[in-house]
Image 1 (cartoon, one colour):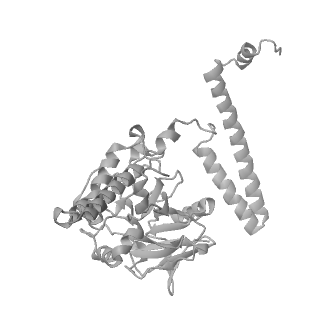
Image 2: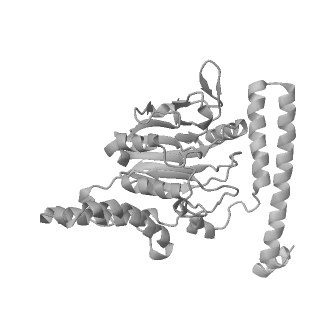
Image 3: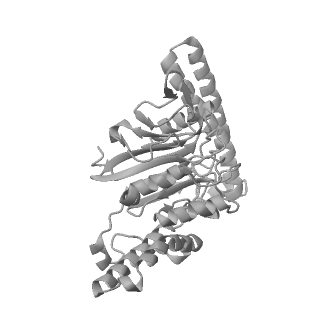
Length: 389
């Protein structure tokens, strides 16, 4: 199956070792079918061994949890992906897997950095050092417990600066999108969760899904695929790639990404290392690819969707909650096959249908008031004068 898959849908979440959050995650996975889930502080029990709770069917769990599992990390992956555990950085707070897509290996790591530690733990430094060249093919979902404006925190602290420097040292890109470019912005969060990835990968459609996590951390979703560009593509600039127009590009994010990605590249390409025409051409190619990559990643994908009218203007959070309850009741009825479950399902179904009809009627009245001055029949007569009612 992985030979036919071109990209992987991923989810990132800190569950705060909470049962309700674990149940919400399980439901969201079943509804959306994510391929890989990076979890920090998972909900687990210890009884003659560690057991992660509420793992959806069709998924396998990877972890290195100990009795200190409340502050650990885990990864869920679809069984069909045939993922295997990574040998690097295997600690309670770091869990990693490897997956093959199109005959290329991609590594996924879930990392939890405890807030009680004043500095970046050595275990994370060791992981990046052990990965070496494989850092380019890696994706990291981190709860950093560090603040930095690069990942939308209100400010930047010393731990956030250290982490930013560490990302630069290992040429890791920060995927977090600017809040201004997102259609859904979570509330009551400190914005300390970070998604990072290597240069050989494309990480796109980074967002906060509008689904309640029941944790003080929001869900983070994104898609990952391998870079398809090679050295020959530079001879045909822009072929097969849609670069951002200046008006649709987040220029602040572009300059930030360019600064981060070009830092190490320029440091390596010193004048002493440019000994031949081939060296100069290689440096130009790398810089061009770096600029192009930053431009693509800075495209404001949410700007277009914000201007489009809603397809279901009557839809709101109340209806979403009722539909969620209805789906849960339907599954319980199928599993329990009891009279109580059947009655509960019918009651919730009735409430949902009544609310749906009510909100559709209200939406239609609002539409008529806004477009026909409240007189829909008069507007129809004006457009069709020969029609009589």
